[in-house]
Image (cartoon, rainbow, N blue to C red):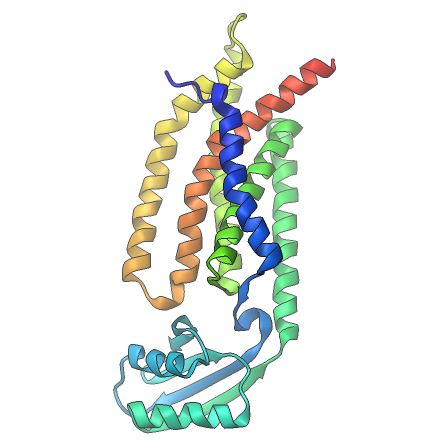
Length: 287
């Protein structure tokens, strides 16, 4: 039987090799922030002809005003276009180009969204993550113990950094959907971690005198491995179908989930449990 705990330093190194390039990119390059964070224009138009959304997206993307996933159909013939901040001339160019390419266009609204809204979204997103992490630390400490809470929150931080790092490295547009995806990832990751910790607690009650903590955790990981794989594969199949067959507007959300669900399983098995073991061993040495 493969000993997961014996190679835990390797798992730590793998995690660092994945996280550090992302951190470097976040510091040096930052993120490709969308209209939700940096502000811009919100243009709603009504087309008189029956037009496919791909045609509208092609026009907007061709002008360089927005990415294709920032064009949404809001009704039978209404389209919502989120662009960077446009001048009056650029707004007029957008409407005239649409008329040339797809036919008659009725402008319903052209609102400017300031960066203040983006700052509020950013602050609320950070607060949401901090509150979620704090509450989970309290819950796991109450249900298990403080060291397991620390290990679980560390694993969650690992998942968040991996997702943010990949978005920064490949300059994938960041919008409010990413915030929702990260909160979903946290929920998925902590659930998987709690299942493993629960099995560890059960095995601790039946622990043999000569059984080391590393061996007990290794057995617990093997006992929950099938459940973890089955769960993650089921979720991945659905997410892959959504990514390739779903609409363009949900691709950011689904992509973040694909990354987060995969790394969530990894961190639950190869980070949370080993970190808890190392914390327990440090406590034992201190005593």
